[in-house]
Amino acid sequence: MVAACRGGDLSDIVVTASVPQDGVYSGDKAEIGLRAFTIHESLKDFRLESFDPDNGKRLLAESHNIGKKTWDSTIVWTAPMLANDSVKVSLKLWANDTDGHEQSFSYPILVVWSDKPLAEASGLVLYSAGFGSSDALSLGRGEVIDAKTAEESLVDVYIDSECNWRTKTDVQFSLVQGFDYAHSTRRGLEATIRSMRRSTMLACPQAADVILLSRWKASTEKEEEYLEPWGALLVTAVVKEEGYTRFIVNYKAL
Image (cartoon, rainbow, N blue to C red):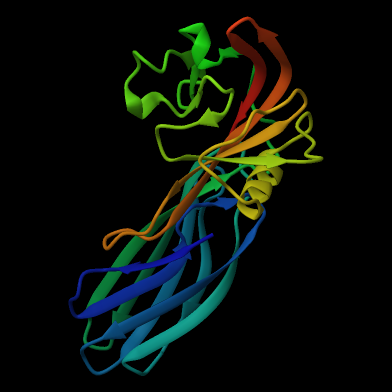
């Protein structure tokens, strides 16, 4: 997970924390750096609390009679086990100084179930370009579409006339050997995708192939490189027809 630093507006007191930017799995541990600063004589108190729907408010760290202008600390936070999936937990920092000024700031952190079974769409039928339709897949919709008539932003996977799998978006493919598609979980699928080589074209998949899907954006002046694991396709059958090829696939999405 990538950490991001944010904090309160520049004023009498500034509080910041380095927190997981992309979210964490329930039960995982994350190292969180804490910092407070005052423009006045010295800091007095600091407090870090968490809030979630299951556990309510919980005190995670506190320090009193700090007696200096800058205070730094690091804690190891364990993401809570929650009753629901994909819940935003709020981490709230608060500090005051000896002159009576105070500042607070909250960070929402997404907590997801690590081993939640993945929803699956089975028996999707994709055709190579020679068929004339149903030759593309929209990952967001989880459905087969026509590459010629659909908006380009929806054509995450399409099959050319030579049966190569390509994309018109920022999707990348990874063909993986020995991946347990049937029992895959969110954690396992994401970890495998991040460890694999990726490409924007896949040559002629065969029956029983597992294809991992991710979205990847190159770094720019404004944004850093970003990889988003997306899901997996299992090719259950490849049928050669006159002038085109038919692929039957199952799809699991994160």
